[in-house]
Image 1 (cartoon, rainbow, N blue to C red):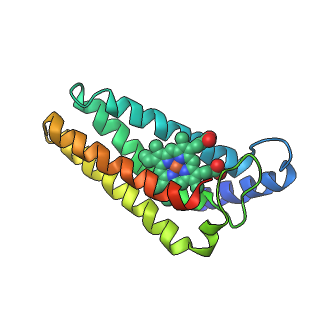
Image 2: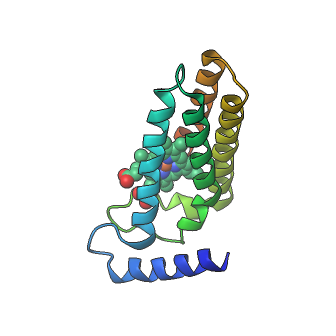
Length: 142
Ligand code: HEC
């Protein structure tokens, strides 16, 4: 926790210092993590009738990020090229709930993959997870 706070504080400082030089600090970090999310979803999709271990691994990575992502949204961090909407900080409880729903859906898919579920069940789990990404983007991403 101490480490996380240090990272956030120094990241926030660098956002202020480099606001006009493209994505920096905490904004760059979260954008990179979300890009990894997209790649993870691609890998899962490509393995719905393939390697369940890949699904479990990628779902686990998505879950881990979902559990920490709210810490990467210090108030007002909307500097360009961020696509984060100010509504996040007007509804931070809801934003947090949507991150939790994302973590839960990812954990669910991980469990399915680990328990030998068939491609149909994995596909349903994948779609349910994708919906939790969209639910948040609809309200809080440009
Ligand atoms: C609780 C809210 C929330 C959830 C859940 C969420 N996102 Fe996002 N996502 C955001 C926000 C806010 C941004 C904009 C961040 C920024 O630009 O500062 C974003 C940005 C992105 C981006 C663009 C990154 C970039 O560099 O342009 C991708 C891709 C993305 N998310 C994918 C996903 C995927 C895939 C999932 C689900 C596995 C997901 N997100 C779940 C809120 C969320």
